[in-house]
Image 1 (cartoon, one colour):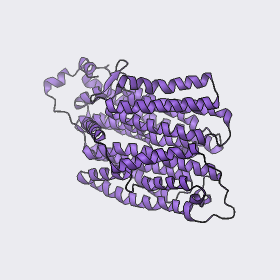
Image 2 (spheres, rainbow, N blue to C red):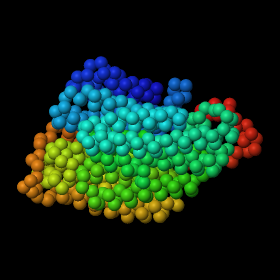
Image 3 (tube, rainbow, N blue to C red):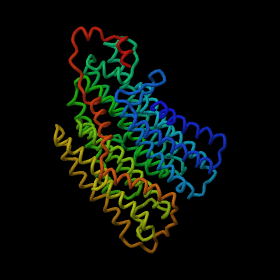
Image 4 (cartoon, one colour):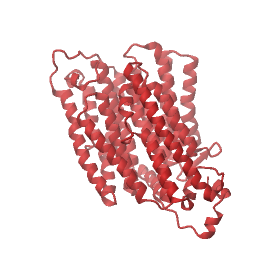
Length: 506
């Protein structure tokens, strides 16, 4: 089952891109991308259900399907499907039919690169996959070709590539640390690194982790490496912003989590967990300060992404069953919620012809259904009940209060209250303050732009009221891989940890 699902996840968007290149017609490209998104969603659900706890390996062990990777792929597939539906209405509004095939080619290719990254069993290949997401998504960020969009695209690729370079250096240091016990050459896979971790030099492990945390943390949007994110998320088309926030950031977080498991296997818990908690808290603080004073509607959503990736980082930093489960649950809830929010922001921008929240007025009167969905999403994104983010944030806070992260949990709670007040105050202005004489007259919204908001909100409400038991089992499996320390190796075991054992472990 996992082999078929993997083939569909890679093959469907790849074949769609090839078909769009062969027949670059707007409506055909739209349908091909939508069909690929639907197939990827079905495959992602099947992969999540059938992924073995130990991981299934394919293509000579270059690909791995394990519960962590399958979960992140599911989050990405959900966003890809919703964003593809929204794009059918949103991308028709500017009237640039001739450019639509190019957009959908890049969009499907972007989804393909996101799906490939969590499947990489080799840390070096994972780094290449993450860098490929940067290359493809840069063209989507700058797709509208405005001066601000092009500037955001350049800023995005320069800052993220600089960060990813540090992640590459960290990968090299991890490999070097393994050579002392595994020999000068060995098959570097995630499992080999975990098995060899107790024999590695701890100073090298910590140094390597700091580099990959800063490197992939740049891609995730953790503060203070987040500076590319507000521009890229705000300047790209709304479906692209949803993919960047709800899919790409999770794929980059996967690398940090897998390296965290390596340090834990070496018996290093307090230091990496505290470092991750510091970055998560800093992200919440930066997001709170900018959300309160924000004026751009999509930049408001972008800083919310910084906030929620900080919460995910805190969950993994707190660790334990509640921390890991809350972080993974938050990934899915954030993917659904942020898709809803960017769809609503894109609809408001397209209908009113402005990016500024100060010029969007009486939104509920003009679009009662879309406004109700967007407002419900705004309440949900602040972590209010009864939506999914409330459940995941409460679980993460529970992990923080139970463990050594008490200080971070207290800061997180205070900042969440501040963000709740500041975020919803912006919606009060857009919904209830009267429009001035110079307010733009809004254009009509189509069903394609509203339907995916329903499809995001309904499961978000269900996940807030009901936590499926099957999800909890998967979360426990991932927690055991991340948190389990290795037994103290005997001297004979240390002497025998050589390259042949590494090849068997991979």
